[in-house]
Amino acid sequence: MKPHVSNPPTSEPETKQKRTWQSTFISRGGAALFLLMLCVVLAISGRQIWRGWPATSSTPGLEVSSAAAAPVQTPNGDGLSSLQLPAGRTLLYEQADHIYTIATGGGASHALQTPGYIYNRAVPAVVTAQKELLYSGDGIWRMNLSGGAATQIASLPSDQVITSMVVSSDGSTLAWSSAPKDGSGTISLYAGKLDQTSRVYQQPADKCPCYRAFAFPNNDTHTLLLTNDRGDHRRARYGLWKFNLGQGTSSRPQPYLSDANQQGPLALAPQGNNLLYSTFQGYVPLQEENAPNDISSLSYANSLSVASIDGAQAWPGNAQTILPEQGDLENAAAYRWVSTPQFSPDAQKLTYTEFSVSSLKHFPRQYALYTVDLHGAGGAKPQLLATSTAHYVETGSWLDDHTITFYADNALYALDIQQHSVARITATGAYADIIAAI
Image 1: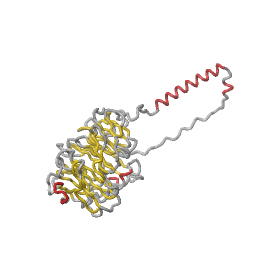
Image 2: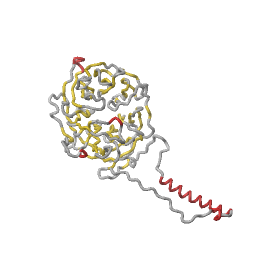
Image 3: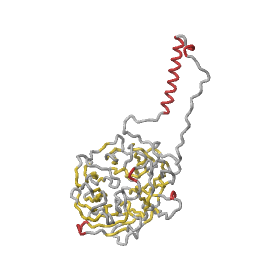
Image 4: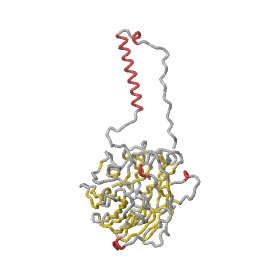
């Protein structure tokens, strides 16, 4: 990333000889000639200023599908072509103040009426198979995106904070967890039908593993996968456990993936039960500029592996390595870290953001977008999609099986991985977390 270099200010030319306007134009004809010359000069100057002025949209919130505005380029440095976004899709994203929707065919963003909403990066809102929005705050809230007001389906004590929220693939079953704000008290797990969750497990907050809900296996509403946040209420996941909801409050978590090392789950494929996980997660220094305020002191994946969790007791013996660990390196800037991996809707592909961290002041990051064909003939090998000049980048939801969304420097974009084309969806003005595309 090249540093910004400002051009030196241009000084006004010195006047070699003073002139007296009164002596030059002493007649009405001279005054008229002067005014005519002045108008010509202003017209020419105004035209030059207009040509160099940045173009703006006359309609606030209306974005043009332009590749020129996107801070990404091909691996060889060329610009990407312009993508024409498909109509009929809606993107949901959340910010510190509201949850928003925007149609991909054009138009302004629309803020949903979400009472009780509290932004929590560790607990993103969820859209169910029935296109219902679930979000957290002073409890759990439910809203039909086709119309209707939001209703509260679970309450929360004032001294607790919600640490996780997941829904089954058929949209019928909800699980969530809470922990004390000050670290003193109990951690609770809740599960059940959307509006009928009840506590299924409880433990002291000072005796980790500190469980939170991670996911339901696909087509299974009786098994809940748990992970350990080690007392960190932010987006932290270590180890993996299976919890049988059919046994009620007598059930105890059974280990799948040990949390003894810095390993943990990242995502569960929307079809099948393929789990993406990392065998090592490392601390990354805080980027002090141009990044969300709540990413400080986070651990990121340094490796990627995929394995099936179908009843495997000796799991993960059938794992496939996509990105191996780097081990110990002398130069911290040589490490590459992975964030926001996303399975495609058909579970055939994977995209993720990769970044490295400079040792310069404020720890600036350099970003790139990758894709993986999980069922390719040559094996699951990452392919570089694009590099970026943005200060902060995150991968978002897929619009279809070949178009991925991403956030970069206060704007949302869509990238077609087949046509290598890109479009800006909307400017957000601040950090935005992409929830889903419907």
